[in-house]
Length: 231
Image (tube, rainbow, N blue to C red; front, side):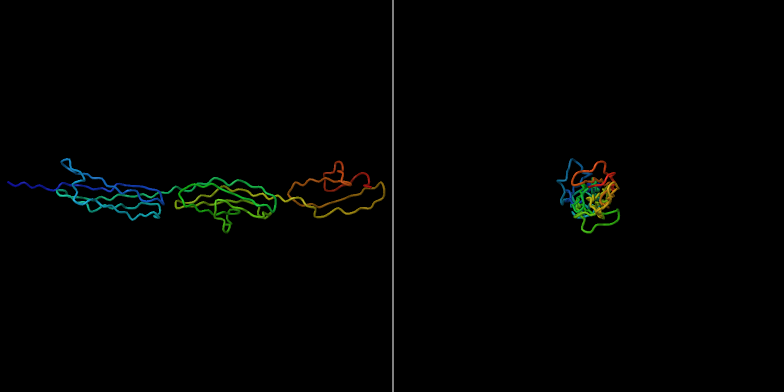
């Protein structure tokens, strides 16, 4: 009579892991199934070794965790791979707000963005015009002119994707200026004298006529035609 004793089956499995993009890999651990007679991993003659090709800079995705090398007397060892999942939080953005400035002043837009670092920024004017060098969380329009008025937005990106902010409006107010001055008038007594100016600036424009530095009553139009001569 003969008795054949075979090795017990032992399965060594690499446990699945996950981490955020840009972080170091977590400890790569294994689990065991098949020890008999109360035995544990302490009976291994050589321990299991785990490796993964994922490094800190690896992009979001799934990477194998390979386990190998475990051996023990009286056990037939099978190695089972696991998976390391690298994830990233997509970007989110708050702002910018509308800005109103007087011409020649500086106008600044800013946003607050979240998501897995690093975050990239690109500002746009009128939707599709990328602004050269505008790659920060804030944008300053220096010496703002009427031609700078319009919509500004920013696209925030990271390894997980991109998001476009709301469009903020820049309003540039132009101070009033007289482009055509009133002309001197010479009229006969008891006749009308009409004075006219041409003014430019952000509408609406308001007018106040003065005679010798004193406001003239009821003069709120661009053309002054008093009932009596200005003497």
